[in-house]
Length: 201
Length: 201
Image 1 (cartoon, rainbow over the protein chains, first blue to last red):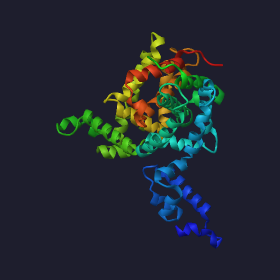
Image 2 (image 1 turned 45 degrees about the horizontal axis):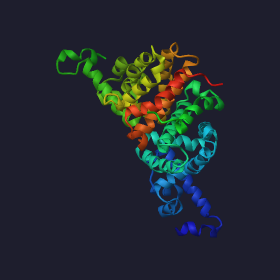
Image 3 (image 1 turned 180 degrees about the horizontal axis):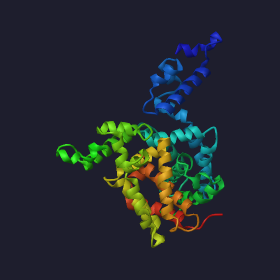
Image 4 (image 1 turned 180 degrees about the vertical axis):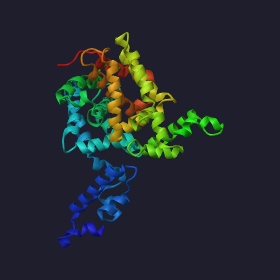
């Protein structure tokens, strides 16, 4: 750890911020190349040229580092409650537009695609995402949605994930060629129904 | 090719049916282990102990073999038009129940999960599935659905894919624990709206 803590002194060795960035960059590359299951803290430390303890110091566990690399918690989890708060009537449209925006913005699109691919193709990644993201999403929406808020949020997110796969991963022509407003006009009402429509039966 | 064509003569060497089965089994294992992108006709032939020409003889191209392994064309493509024909009003519910059934039946669930995982995580597999399955699905529904039939079918399938990922891959509790009837009651109307609801705009 001393290497990281004293790195600024020499003026040439990477300082704490740079070390943190080097670890993040190594993690980004390894998670993308080998997936969650094939990546270890030791491997990331080796690629970044630091001691594994330093990786834990900056990022905690492998799960936490994975989520940091994906940038998902910050962008998605922090904004969803605000999207749902207030006028629930427009929430389906707002959530759909926000989610499409994450895939279409250069800053977040790579992380969103990695999340989607990891979640679907890798068992351990699926576990991490299920346990962390859904738990935090559920807690965030519990008091904002009517009866069965967790099921409503799960159905809305399941729909939006499928939409993202069709539009950005499979890139099926009628869906990938439409502009964002048109997609929102089709999908927003379905998401709205999940969020606030009457429970069936 | 002679090995396959004359195999019955010896009485002990595998006959054409068995050879075909051996190739299929090798393909199934290799596609599952290495994915579409990492699997070659030559590798499949080697694993099955036959000449690569025999693989082409029985199954055509790698794309065709991949689709045969996934059993998708036969099960899905042949039944969707029948599901949509006749009373379109119940089509959303019928399509949702049929799709969930494919993931819950022991005969088709492995193939459906492989399809989903390959489509999302592997670029070449995504291309094969996009070009073949969607083209055949589109042709099948073109005369059965109202305006913009291809977009309607794409939205319905995108939603159902996302549902399958949430229920069977991520296995998010509220969705994975529900019984099939309850899922159909929530999702059927959304699929129905895509198939027959008014176009937005």
